[in-house]
Image (cartoon, rainbow, N blue to C red; front, side, top):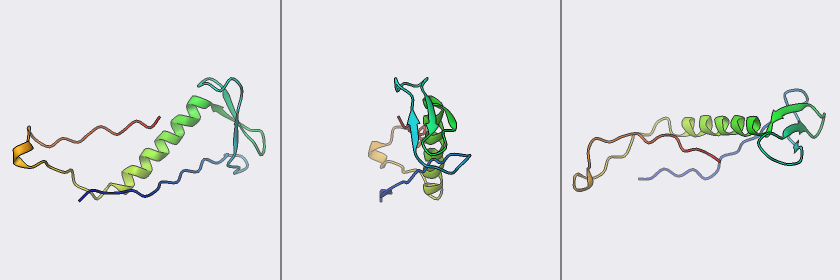
Length: 91
């Protein structure tokens, strides 16, 4: 039986005011600074904010799948011992 995740919610909040909206300086690239829309606090480069979101999403997924065992293929399709896949990169 396959596991299904219906939704994963991720909320990033400002460490100063708790605001959840951010602005990205133009041009919007990995080096662009991000700021809280509510209080103006600098949150870091866009690449840093994305990495924090990736890490939070990975933690949420790891917790959701913590009790699952890896699937093994049937003997006809078995090409060696079962392996664990590397975590997916969220881009």
